[in-house]
Length: 391
Image (cartoon, rainbow, N blue to C red; front, side, top):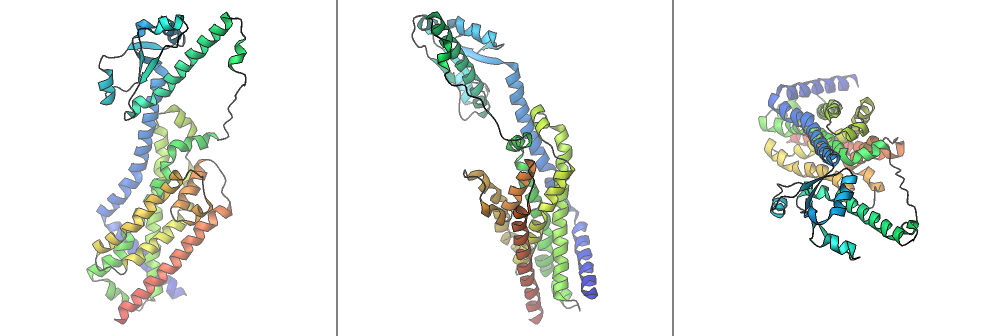
């Protein structure tokens, strides 16, 4: 047993040193893992901040405001600044150069209102212009408020109680915590950390199997008086360690990123500190172990590094797309999510972001799947190496 552990430790040290010597590979791994997630988070916060700033300005673009003095009076009492829409507002909305919806008032607005008719106004936007579309709900609420005020005045003039307009009082109660509300905008974080595990393990797994076969160093290595299981286990430990190292760096990169969020509301809701980093890192252990073994099993039968890279493309695609299942499923989280590699980690990390406590019943399925994949794939790799020596 001591010999087995010593041989395995030697292989682990050798594989890690080989991986660290390749500076270009390290840069390809670390730069996306450290920068891409935080940069995207900052971009989202910048978009939210711009929408918040626009809402605070209380500006509304109107075409034909001179036809509706009563509406002007209402808008000004709501502290809105009225701006005249450009003559070519339709073309500019269509070209996405105008980022605000336009309120269009017809010349007969005030006359129809005084005569008891229902004047029509238009809220002009372009659904392909997302920034302009985001400004529609506030404008719709503004016009709904004007309608309620006019209806209240009409009833009061006729001696009718205004309570008839609202026979039922509706109060909203949001059960989501502050952290849970923040996950609507921070749901990208688990996906980036899962991909960091995958790409961290990918290069090491392919290089330690197909890469060595291509260089002609695998067969001489197998001729050494070392147990094949110790050799395989050592290589796998190095692969899983590198995957977990990149995942840890990726998790840590979100800690300083939250300090630079531009949106005050997102900054107040989003909390990502040491407990979240540790939880995320521990949740990746079964994924790093299982995926590392799967990638080695796929690569051991390949003759070149490029061939192994092409073969691993399916695994990368499946793991990358697995978190999308929870986004596209309107029925909520299903029990089998916890048994799918990648999807289970995404589900558990989302619960951590929401501030919920994880139970063993939620954690054990991913651990069991990770152990099963590791045992099956490492056995296959060891068998493949013994077969190569026999030939």
